[in-house]
Amino acid sequence: MLKKVPYNEAIARKYPEQVGWATCVDDAGNPNAIALGWVMCTSISPPMLAISVGLTRYSHELIDKAGEFVVAFPSEEMKDATMVVGTKSGRDGDKMAEAGVHLIPATVVKAPLVDDACANFECKVTGKLRTGDHTIFAGEVVASHVGPQGARRIYSIGGDPERLFSAVQPTD
Image (tube, rainbow, N blue to C red):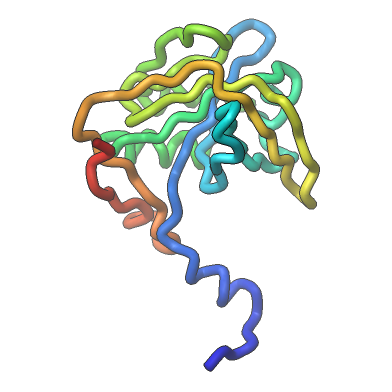
């Protein structure tokens, strides 16, 4: 039987949720990334992905200005880097270097690919929607890349930061 509860109690039951990154660059080409729980497919033809980014985030500013981003799905080996990417701001310094992330040039967009990720998707923004304190950026996938066969994605299980992530089955 259903019971009416506060939003925070009910939403806690959505976990585990996927973890994604969005990479972007500033005007000088310096890379940045944000860890995201809100990434989704929005179209098959053409292929499109959408991300939801908080209005106050530095990555929001960069993606909005550049009109492009890369969605990367981090591998199990990237759990520590994901904590850095998700808890530090690129406004304050080079968090990508701090996280020890190996970035490589993308083939179409200026935002970099994440070398150790399970998959990367280069996206050009085709639409955006303000949703309260976030913007949903819809991006057409203009190039796709996969990482090592057998790489395991990570999911947020919520709660305690010491055990925030859990690996799932290989992606192949």
